Image (tube, rainbow, N blue to C red; front, side):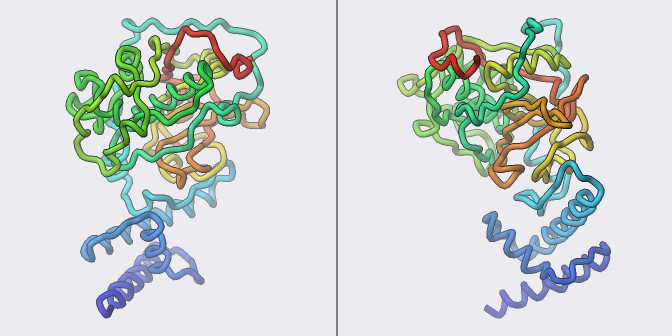
Length: 350
């Protein structure tokens, strides 16, 4: 008990010193208590030797968030599970390695029909085609979660079934020769390779093949069982980079998988509002595109992340619709699964 009080006292003293150095004015806030509450809420326990370092990062991130929120009105940031990470640790442990641009000479991009009369709003969450937000943990399996999101949406549209599919099967079983590090699914991958895989092998449910890599490490060995497969896609479609109208057109038909640059502060600690700038275009994170809204003063895309419900608005966020590469590179790499079967839920895309 004495050691606990001593540690809290040391943290409190460290907090006072850190905030004094950083010129942060929080007169009614017990920093050590806030840090302890944050650890409890997120399930973190650090050795005493690491605790001071994590507190330092916590204070530094809080300072950055407060400054950002003072300078920006359209989007707000908040502390989340990454609050005690440095930006370098966040990039190394959570994001993928920056992807090289695809060789477009070998890709047959989906032609955009340039249809008139696209809806002003698309919301696949309200239509029931989007499963609740999941958390990939410390494994670089965002691409697997974005893949199952696309498959879940397509299955719901064509079969009327919304069921959580196996991110672990994608993480563990997609041929390693296609993955970024050639060895393990926790090191990254791309949805287009995953969609090719599931068109041949199909996909199991999360229940039959649960997620095992929340704490990171090397992806668990593949334990795919064909008898447990519940859904096959026929193949995949790919939208040409910067084809904003093509993205809208295809998004009106189904949720899409996309890649973004998630390394900036505005993405790491996003809480609410519309991201309009302050991020780059070095693609390092895959997410699901689930809607758009053209009626607002700032038109925006709606995305679903795989960092749990403490990020954004219960795991969802808004990114401004712009031309070119798009904010955070959102227009650069867009894929989706295909299935030739006629829809059982035709009203969803009419």
